[in-house]
Amino acid sequence: MNGQVTYISEIMAQPQEFFWLPWAVQYFFFIGIASCAVLYACYLHWQNKSENGRLEMISAFIAITMGITAPLALTADLHQTARVWHFYAHPTFWSWMWWGSVLLPLFTTFMGLYFVALIVKLVWKKEFKATRWIALLAALSAIGLLLYTGREASVLNARPIWFSWWIPVLMFLSALQVLPALVSLGARREPQYQNRLARFQVITLLLFVVCFALWLSGDTISGMAVRQQLTLASSGWWMLIGVCALWAAAFVMSVCNVKATRSVPYITVLALVSMALAWVLRWIFLMEVQAVPKYNIIANPYHFPLGSDGLMAIIGTFGLWIALIIIVREGVRWFARRVQHG
Image (cartoon, rainbow, N blue to C red; front, side, top):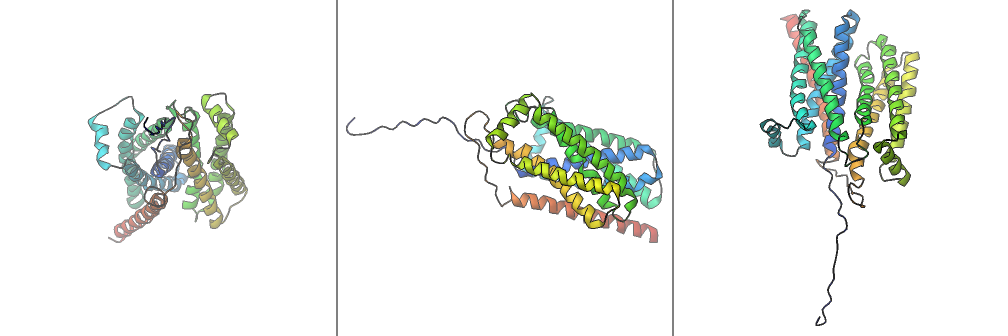
């Protein structure tokens, strides 16, 4: 070989890039709570009880602010906003993402109409008969969104951990348990609602932990895959301990809230703990699962960036939601004052 040495290198496996980024976590977080808020508001509206009016308005307020924040996070996750029109130009009825592209604008439209109808009722004391049907359409689109966001991941049999109907159930219940805590915080000056909302949260948390235990202990492909990762002590999967700790904190605090009316700082902490539980669970489902090898034997590394695809995305999305809370609240108050003094 004339003194030359030939080296042969063979690539046995190659790490795979994450196709979902923290933007997706933010989207699933906000759209889940917004959908649950619409369902609860619709339920209160159809009960047709005067004492439900305040809780219905707060639920609709949560839905409209989070319902605006979520699509913006989704658009950022698509990386190219021009890609959105491809969903409508090239229909794919077998794709859950395509159904999401149809359901999301319907949800936003019906939710917007529902919120406007509630504002009219608040300011002019006038209620339209069509409001209950708009609320129902908003609720139906919310159910569709909850189903699509859960099934978008859980239909992938190439990812055994995701491949389970328990995933959409747990995503739904984790978002639902946040709602009573946020509504209670919105009604912080009306403590008469606290015990009722706390009971709602206790029941939801109990349903969540039962479903969570059934998922982890089941003989399904997903359950066995999760137990395998726990046995291997995979990086990131110890966050499940954090989920358990957050659940315990939320459960104890909500049980204490059932027994007695609590202060504003107390229900604020409860709301933050509940939101943290829902957010951490989505981080595990959407991000940590992508680190698990799919077809190879190499774990897929993920380096959490501080820029627009990482920390700034998370902070910015929550900042946008807080800004929308202030803008919508003050806008409604300004409009109500103008009408009353006009």
